[in-house]
Amino acid sequence: MKVHRYLIIGVLVAALTITGIAVSSTEADTDHFTPKTAEEKAWMDYVYKEINKKLFEAYDDGMAVFGIDKEKYQYYDLHADSEEIKELSEDSAQQLFSTVYSKVLGKDKDIKQGDIKPGLFINKEDLKEAFVLFKATEDGKNYIYWFQRDESENTWSLSKKNVKAGKKLKPLKMKKLEEFKASQQAD
Image (tube, rainbow, N blue to C red; front, side):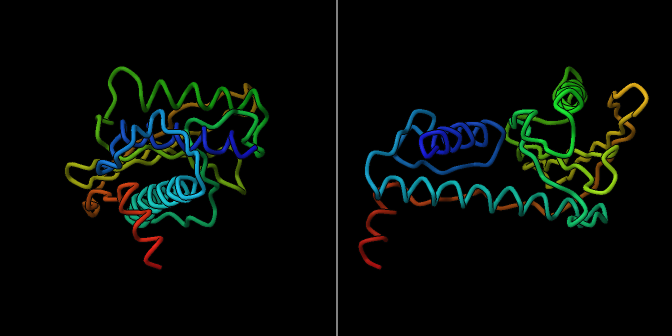
């Protein structure tokens, strides 16, 4: 299970680097980095925590800008397996992912390389409603795509999208592995 977790962390770091959270050099190719020591595992935990904080800083800003009560929604990574979405049947979750990919990440997409990774949020009380939220790193604009499920056909469709100004986030800067080790030894 721990190996699976670190594999996911590596994939997450790679995906976030590609989709925009500007990660400073970490002296390791995080796409292929496999922690071997306790210090390296601690560093990977640190990297994961810092990336997560930056993601949710972006999501929180977007939700505030759009007036969304974040307690009403459950977050999912767009790379989650459909069976991980417990609120929906696997078929419905797969259909939602397919619709999201075609509408948010498809041909005429608003998202650009370097933007904050989109997050999927499903309404905990009304399982017919979901949205995808992401932030443009260049200007801080928040993009939201609302999806509705037609229960009779169990299909998801884009119901509306909106863009509003938000705060521009500072790039994520993390300690390099050697800096992290030195700071751990100093503590």
